[in-house]
Length: 323
Image (cartoon, rainbow, N blue to C red; front, side, top):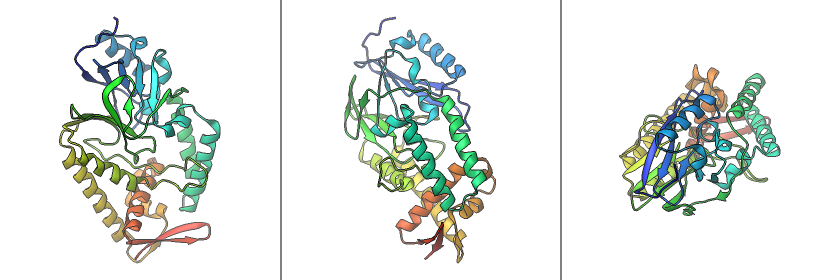
């Protein structure tokens, strides 16, 4: 069926994933200049079959999709990019090396994180497991390109009335799109109703940069949402968020409480970030060391920013101590 402009409509399509996070939402936007899909889901045949079935139920085939908005580069959101042969792709500049699968960039990122994990007390075998898992995740992505680079405040080609908000934290590539007049947004993994997004530590993107203070970024990105009068935000996972200021306040409070818990856990001891992680997440650390480490280090960054914790660089290892 040919695409016809009509009243603007946003439809969630929920796809299965092989990841612990569970199903992912992608969004079909009809009624604007270009028939648009926000994210694609992971590269699995099961996900592709569900997506094509849901498109068919709405009168479309994949080749009808004219544009794909990439909210961020994680595999559960971008894996099927190469299946939409007629779609232009729009995303953040930092998503480019991930989407293009730039081998030099990926190697530098991996090398940085290996050194970083080790300096914070992580065992070599755990670091190897993390990199193996990261390599395995890439089977759920596809190599593609980004046609339109967008940043904060930019309008989106083919989506009249929508603009971009940069919301780094969960990922350095994370954006959401917002229609201020209609008071709605599609947030990717920036704001999720039933869980708090992990502010994942990433390697620097450019020479000479420091690593991201992801949780501090995430807090600022969350607080920014209170500047807009949005009635609904459609999330990458779970149900739409309808009381955005309340959820933002809840997330900030949760972060403050966890930071206080870490400060109490430190007591008078001097510990590495990994030692703190193991005490904070004794079981989950074994299953997801990289995510639990990011969660812990983010809250250590928060404590350090408030002057509650100091970093002690003891040669090859970094320790933390409460002030």
